[in-house]
Image 1 (cartoon, one colour):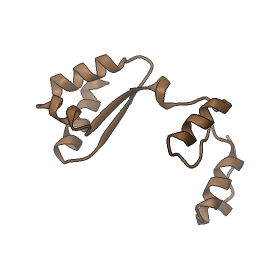
Image 2: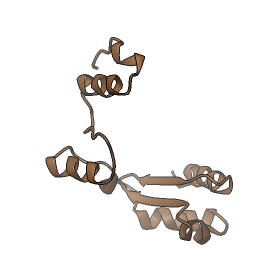
Image 3: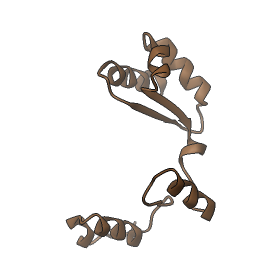
Image 4: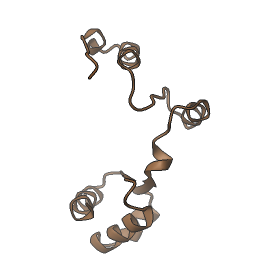
Amino acid sequence: MTDIVVPCFRAGLESGELCIWVTPDFLTTDEALEALKSGVPDFSDYLARKQIEVFPYTDWYLSGAPDDVQRATDSGFQRHLAKPPSVQALQELLAARGSPAASAKISAP
């Protein structure tokens, strides 16, 4: 996985983009950081400037428990959707944003 992802992050960093890597369950943040250090010249500079951040999936994906919803809103998010979101929750979110997709017929799998 790192042989595919690291070059993408390198290109983004070198183009001045802000990058976030949420690592999957089979890759620790330390392993991801080591791969980035090996594959991105001057990686420590990008990290020091906070141009890239690496999070474990357990810190990024919340379950939808009441304390998770509060944590999301305290962090500045306007809405929290637990995975997988319901069709109704998606339509409500789209409607709140004024999206024409809110009235589209969506069928659940």
